[in-house]
Length: 440
Image 1 (spheres, rainbow, N blue to C red):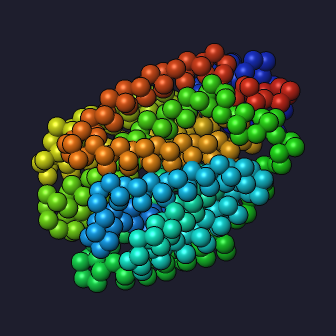
Image 2: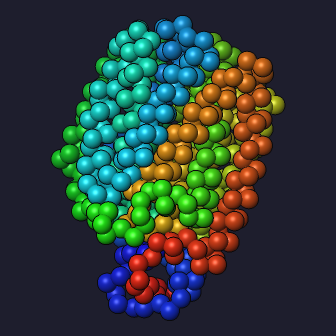
Image 3: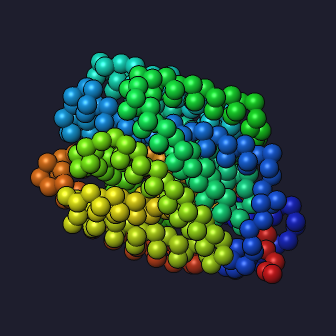
């Protein structure tokens, strides 16, 4: 069943054609204003609290871990990229299993498992042995993948699909807000006390987040076991045209994000000569990304799901090319880096609406598993590509990323054309009639 129809099944209204129902849903979505009361505060808002606390650690850790590898472990940029890519590889493997687990065990359990393992992985800053650091970073990548899958599928199952644009933006906003608060504190802590105390603080914060998830976040019933799923498994889902286009839309911008997360902090650190500037850049980029996410989600709910992604991918292309041309100027790296962060995070929140349009609700866990595995592959590719090409020219990796993302524009147009022809969730539909949604 189409994700947008799930909450309306109890009404008993019947639609004669999937294409007609899809058109009426998107019309209704554009006209309905966002009202937070449609989201059960007992389920969604505790999830937002978990996101905020997770962002305060995850986003700051991502910014400073490459610097830790460079300054403390004395790794070269290429070896540094390999270590970071190892975490993404572990996350990819975890995503392939975690998506199915969230559909069978429930989203909360997968989220809790990820947080528990994340507390162990946060010990990464307590070691100066490269192999142990790499191993803990891989554990962190796997556990972070489970956190992402659990939280994402929890949201799409708890939220009203017609308000999912803003709720997804708030979901992402909570993480970026946590990162915006945590980044300057982390910069100050690192400049005054070093990486070891920074790591201890991270362990404590993850444990607090785990307590909130276990005791405050309500449990959700699993959507069903594999014997009731019409898809035949995750690999069969991956062969659907809509899912393949979603994979492409996830892959291409993540190439940029994979290289930017490593290269931009290093570029700013080299150009500015201090970590405080790196921290301030992280705060500024996350604040602006937060506003961009909320605007993108509101636009998706008000005007439909087609145009916000097109704008987001266009902004990402501009940011990539700007970084390519101004890679030796501090102002250029900061300005276009912020633009790229805003575009990337907005596209991440808009992905929820695309999944809701193209994937049945009962299969959201596996869909997010495939997409997160795609994200991991792209992060590996982006990190390795960035590490290799930056030795030739600092701006060359971003030029390549900008050119690649021209393909994203084509995929967005193709995706919505496919949905308009009655595609999307249709291949996975059970033999039941679809309910109509009465327009305003």
